[in-house]
Length: 325
Image 1: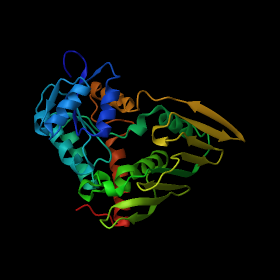
Image 2 (image 1 turned 90 degrees about the vertical axis):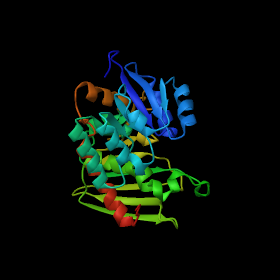
Image 3 (image 1 turned 45 degrees about the vertical axis):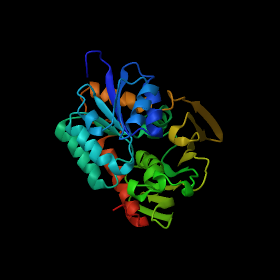
Image 4 (image 1 turned 90 degrees about the horizontal axis):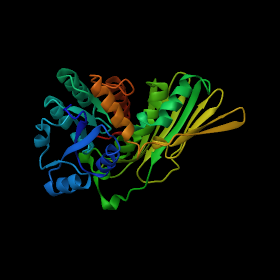
């Protein structure tokens, strides 16, 4: 961190998510988007101009070597997360890496080990964990407001045109429903119930071996989660957490909910909790807090949390027969 007390960010991978993140970063007074990098230098230049960013690079390595950058946000396709995160950490940078961390638990562990070795903050960019609605719902569940959880129902689905191609349908980039959006409902189940005792999953795949839609049941000792992810259909994208005394429903789209409702004793109470900006500000604030407190991981979404989720995703990947190698 430099003399002006602002945390200086660099961004690698300048697609849609990076644009949304950069938009939210402008809302934080103690943050500065300082440099961006793309192999397409014109793209980097345009991105930098759009967000009043001081520097643009035509190589990732150049950004890694910029000693004015405190933390790098990695928003490239899934297949490159591991290597880029490790290189950034090796060059003394803190790292916020887009979900999923990697395409294998082995690589996720390598990333975490690099964070520990170089004593730099590292976090998976699971923005949903930090939005006000999810934090408050977790508190209510832990307080027993709806009793013991017995079931969770959650999905994430949208229609993408396979004929148009793109990274979603590119096996080399880790495409498919599971890794791109299936991690969200899996995250919610893990956050509320922990590691399952058993996982059952079935997919419909295209001819290239990409899962177009995947349905999952996570079985716990006294509860079950019924989860779904699809890139070939629409849904209402609500999430329902049902307990012995009532149920909670996160507003649609639940992964970035601006509120929720609690239903019990034939009464419903609604709660409005708007997000700051698009919603990425909350995870950026967590990064800042951790860096300022010399923490290499978040207590809200720790290295172990990311590793556990990676193990769940890998189990499902093996069951549905998706192979990225």
